Image 1 (cartoon, rainbow, N blue to C red):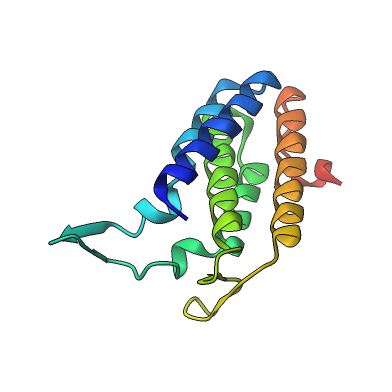
Image 2 (cartoon, helix red, strand yellow):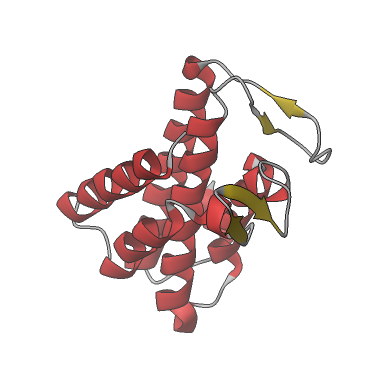
Length: 154
């Protein structure tokens, strides 16, 4: 997908977060994470040819990586609430970026083998995105209760 598409989806997700009265640090994280899988490859352009330090759609496009990063705030102390909420929004938005890319013919790496890409159906990508939104909702509930223990997730 094009960068503009990911930016638009980030702004749309920001609007949803803001309208749902979620913490501002989570909403800001969503904006920055929308294009994270692409810009973390450290792309450079030479005569209109894109080259990157990290191959495109390998490590940075792993849904597993972003999903685990999104769960990290459940293990962070309440005193780091700003950072953990920003990280959750950042990772959730990056996960949605990867979910959108997973529906394209090029696909994304699903698990540990970062060089083997697989394509997902739109239904699976939407289901994964809904799971991410449920996790974000639970994180915000924990934030509001000032309790970040993962055990409270269940």
